[in-house]
Amino acid sequence: MTELLKDQVFMAFTTHAAIVTLKLLLMGPLTGYFRITRGSFVNLEDAPGKTVEEKRKTLKTNEEVERVRRCHQNDLENVLPFVFIGLLYALTGPSLSTALIHFRIFTGSRFCHTISYILALPQPSRGLSYAAGLGVTISMGVQVLLKVLVL
Ligand code: GSH
Image (cartoon, rainbow, N blue to C red; front, side, top):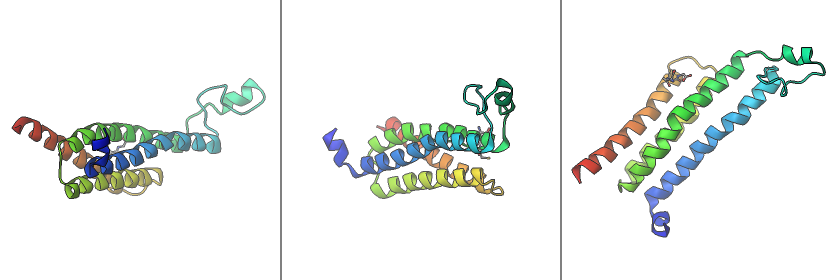
C-alpha cells in the first residue's frame, strides 16, 4: 500500500476519483436546495406547513428538482464505472501522461455535463460532455482488457 501511494499514476487517479466522487455526493445537497427553494417535497414529514392540508400542497414534482435528480442519476451511471475501471487501469501501469489525459478529460467532462444539465444549456453541450466521459471510461476498460489478455 505504501508503495502504491508513491506511484504517480495511482496518486493522480486517487485525486481525480476523489474530486468526481465529491461532486457526485454534492448533487444530494443541491437537490435539497432546489426542493426547499422551489417548495417541492416528496415526504409529508419534510414539507413545511402547520396543517396536513398545507403540507400536502407541497407534495408535488418540480421540473428543476427533477432536472437535478436526473443529473445526479447520470453521475451515478458514469462516475461509479470510472472509479472502478479507473482503479484497474491505474494498476496496469500506464504512462503518467496518458493516464493524466484520461483522468483530466473525465473530470472536466463531468463538470461540463453538470453545468450544461443544471443550466439547461443548448445541446450538444451535455451530449458531448457525456460522450467525452464515456469515451474515457471505455478507453480505460479496453486497455485493461488488452493488458490482461496479452499478458
Ligand atoms: N440514462 C441515460 C439517459 O436516459 O439519457 C443514458 C444516456 C445518457 O446518459 N445520455 C446523456 C444524458 O445527459 C447525454 S444526452 N442523458 C440525460 C439523463 O441521463 O438524464
